[in-house]
Image (cartoon, rainbow, N blue to C red; front, side, top):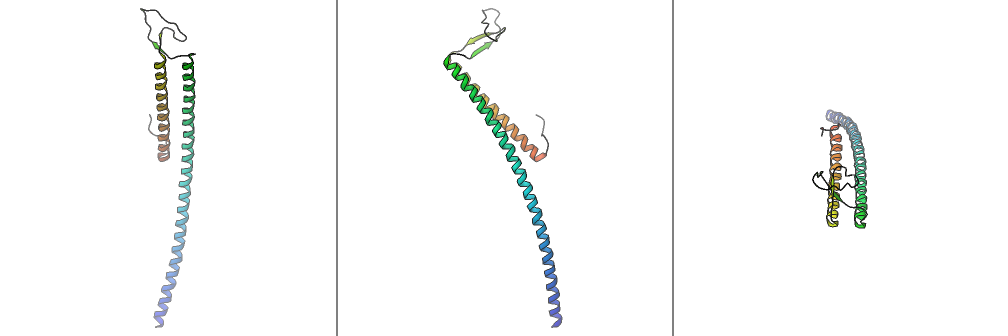
Amino acid sequence: MLAAVGAAMVFGAGWVANGWRLDDQLAERDRQALAVAEQVMAIGRAANAAISTADAKAWKGLEDDKKELRRLRGCVADGTCGVRLITAEDRHGPSNPGAGSVGHDTVELDPDVQRRVLDHREAIGEDARKLEYLQEFASQCWRAINGDDGPSR
């Protein structure tokens, strides 16, 4: 009986010692996991900051474009400026040597067509800004994953 009690005490002591060692291993793994989680959070914060900067830049570009289009629309509505179509030089007919039209003829467009031209300019400008933003976003994602500037365009 004494041998059984002694064996149980030795077994219990070994169990406690292994439990303590296991606790130390688990604590070390917890510290490592916490360090990795903090690194991931730092990378996420840096990525969010880069995205916020790109967003602000893109929105400023869009706002600047819209401000310029409002100015042009007001100018066209007031009749102080207009949208003209520049054509290739016509050697057989009269030339309208307007400002900046060296060697080309210009055709004045009616007000409705001028507004539509500005509408198209606005749509094209917005699409171009969106594409620039998406290309920059894709490049940032590529750099975050691969650590370089990505494939050449």
